[in-house]
Image 1 (cartoon, helix red, strand yellow):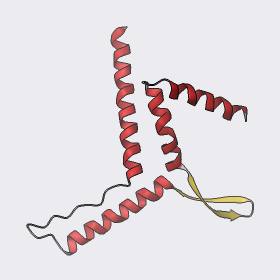
Image 2 (spheres, helix red, strand yellow):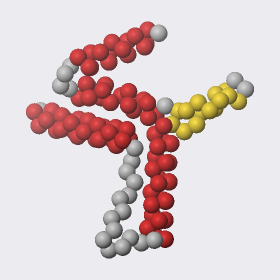
Image 3 (cartoon, one colour):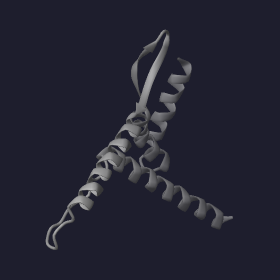
Image 4 (cartoon, helix red, strand yellow):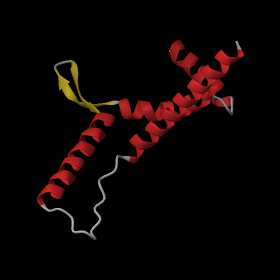
Length: 118
């Protein structure tokens, strides 16, 4: 319980700092946790059975859609003026990927700045 309270205090401190990498990480963290959460499928005796995470499920669904799209292209190639749009990733996955990429870039820039100061 004390650990949870301490984590909440740290999260609040990070969110209060309006323009920091830590704030960005704190804002993205709930989305990452949501995507990484395993789905509960039941019990085997007293042991919980966990299915794939939401992230894994969304990525499997996307791969399945891509495979179907590719199969349709092979079976029936588009005509010269026909446009077929490939399936896009789930919005939550795309947003999280963008946010974590931006955070990574900012951290690298911060490292470069601190190394040039020394």
